[in-house]
Amino acid sequence: MSLHSERHPLAEAAQQLHILQSCCQSQPRFEESLARFGLHPLRATAIETLQVNLGKFCNQTCKHCHVDAGPDRRESMSRETAELCIRALRFSSIPILDITGGAPELNPHFRWLVEQAKLLGRHVIDRCNLTVLLLPSQSDLAEFLAAHEVEIIASLPYFQASHTDAQRGPGIFAKSVEALRRLNRLGYGMPGSSRKLNLVYNPAGAYLPPAQHAIEADFRRELRKRYGIEFHSLYTITNMPVSRFLEFLLRSGNYDRYIQRLIDSFNPVAARGVMCRKTLSVGWDGTLYDCDFNQMLELPVRQGLPRHIRDFDPMQLGAREIVVGQHCYGCTAGSGSSCSGAITK
Image (cartoon, rainbow, N blue to C red; front, side, top):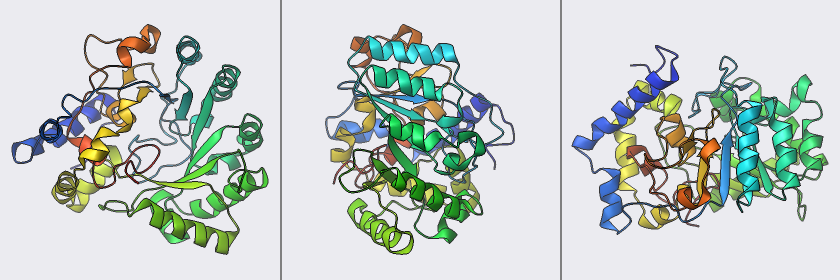
């Protein structure tokens, strides 16, 4: 069974939702787990982060990518939509702009978006795959990010080449090491530096991530010893049963086992701190979502709310009821998972 027999994103999202909802007959629905602890309906408490997806175009094709990004994707945020995102920041007090993709830096409006957000005094995060820093067309990208004090959150599957290349492609680890060294030379990740460099780890298979503090210690020790690389923090993120990882689960026969593991590991403390309660996600076309995962499943914010960035209303959206589904068990399993790593430390 493949999710990619057709490349129509909406058709793929509908198929994924059907697969995820089919388990509800024999397993507790996510809403029921929330209700047991008085958390249903789940509501936003504020908008502290505007997370903007600039598109699905990427210079890599990673096996577990929940965005299904790659060099063959052409979805890309327009200048008009980027301007609407800046307008939303200008007329609100949202302190953080979190830019993602794809490889967001390959969007032609990425640098303009960074510059405008910094002029507004916002903290800017770039979710970077590292190898984009080595592209000839991006030869000055690292210096641009440093000059604007952009926080970099960089994905690195493991501190060994074999694990990383198996997930991201041959030679990716060596390029990632080169990019990290370049960032270190600019002050990124160095002790006491304001140029924040954080890494992201997610498991290679159908497992929950290990304790964040433990795997961070392993990464710090091995990257420092083997390659002289420094970083500030490491975030563990649970693989969500969406897009390519969902296809992997189905193909490998691990789907039922993995979903059950997520359900059995439901943590109400993590559920109280899920990122959607303080984050609003903007799709490449300006559609509004509760989170990046809902975005990939084409589940916009609820009916009756502003559903496009042109209609942004911080009061309504900052107290909205959040759209949830079975995939949400991924964010509430064990120590929890968010774009800033484990929820419970």
